[in-house]
Length: 256
Ligand code: NAD
Image 1: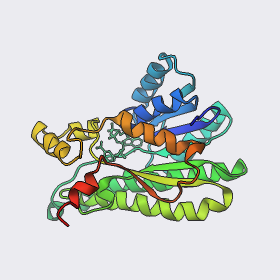
Image 2 (image 1 turned 45 degrees about the vertical axis):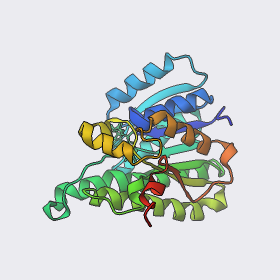
Image 3 (image 1 turned 30 degrees about the horizontal axis):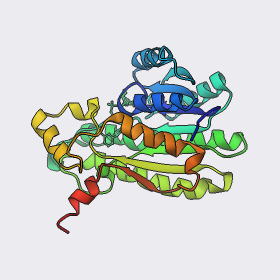
């Protein structure tokens, strides 16, 4: 498995799963662009990993994935900097939620759909067009969630957006196969990142107890899977969901 000479763009790359994946990509020799809505953190993250002495090269760009023109510009920035694009990791996301009947649609639906759902669509579109312009190939990896595959309490909108990400993955894999582009989704379970650290220790302990190893997943463990999916070693994996949930789905089915 190697990512040598591959150019990757990682959205949500300033922290959590995204930053761990930036490091995993660099270890495999990739050239990586850290893309995040928080441009300052993206730049700081790129500078930090550049100092770690891994083989690849790194740059950063600010992007709000909910704005198509900005996603196109981020892809263009990667091509400007490193000459091409080979891997698009559509990973940026926001979480949260409240009881459905308490929703204000303008607050609790539209904004999250714009980031978690539209952002992935824009990433697929912009990267797919770039891959076509390069003569085909390329890999698109989309971050869904265990909540994209099941009903989830207090996560009505998040769950809907993450389900759409799975649907996008299947349809895009089908549509882009003719140009040699692979599209895969991952469904992390409970990963120790700021998104999940916002919850109380009690809730986090409950989350961990639903994983088969009874401990929170580390972002690096998900990142290693993403690096494998980005590499040619996984050429046969396409249009499908790769679970990174430490058996959460099995746990939930144990009484079925
Ligand atoms: P995180 O909060 O550490 O990372 C999310 C990153 O996305 C942040 O750096 C944030 O600045 C960035 N971001 C937010 N809105 C953006 C926008 N509009 N444009 C560009 N960047 C934006 O959390 P994480 O856990 O690393 O989340 C990464 C992905 O993994 C998300 O899509 C999340 O839904 C998904 N996920 C996380 C878990 C978990 O348990 N942590 C489980 C399943 C899925």
